[in-house]
Image 1: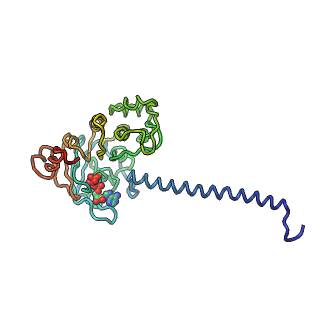
Image 2: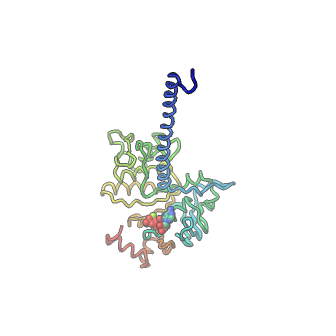
Image 3: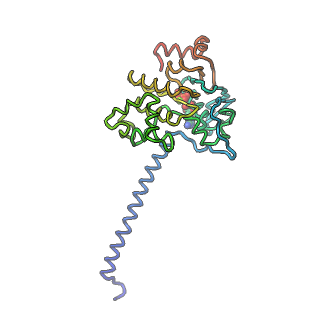
Length: 311
Ligand SMILES: Nc1ncnc2c1ncn2[C@@H]1O[C@H](COP(=O)(O)OP(=O)(O)OP(=O)(O)O)[C@@H](O)[C@H]1O
Ligand SMILES: [Mg+2]
């Protein structure tokens, strides 16, 4: 063979190799796309879960006791380098007590609720359960004892059953059924043609807003925590569903220590005490009757609620 020439065999081999080279390159670029969208999905998931990564378990952490009071002592908080969002807030919630948080938008209610569940650590002061500073608690006991029900429950692609089951490792079908029964919501899903195996689309479009809330409440029932931190949903529902949600909420709160961000009068009224948060400060604390009688911020809010002016 002469220098500077190539045999047909070499060309054929080259073309063959080229195609085997192309394939992985193409696959790589596809993989990259997949990774990118997975990354985007992951960051959305973090947004939804609102789970900051800065909270971690300290060496020598202890399990939280099974039953105990929530203590918030002189807590101040700022997101990152931002302005203070909570300033010197102190509260005590007795075991089995139900405390409603009310206040204008941006007041810091959700932030306070997140600190009670240690989704964040306070910048100053401390939050404790049963005398144990949440920063000293094992993360496992934290997530077992304290469950947060967010305002808008997040559903993923899968059946209704799968969507409830994620609340507890190794939960059986019967456990899921029981959680729904405990809320009086089992029948509502069981009567669907595919029952609890009904697929839920990613954005929950196959279920009504109320049904999505029921799924999210059923997760909390399955997790069966001592402390429930509830951000009450604001979406308006048809009266029938509204009643079902109220019933489910009532049953879920039974026997637990509850901090509920109340957007409805009935929720505040049925709580043992009400805390009013405004501009990051706790400005009023007392029973519904006491605060209405005191004629302050809560009385004003109450008047607006009963006048049907605000929700
Ligand atoms: N993740 C965050 N990063 C930075 N700032 C935040 C974050 N979450 C809330 N904030 C800010 O903190 C303040 C209190 O917000 P928070 O969500 O606690 O109020 P809220 O009382 O729950 O209001 P709403 O009734 O509208 O739910 C607001 O100024 C808000 O913009
Ligand atoms: Mg909020």
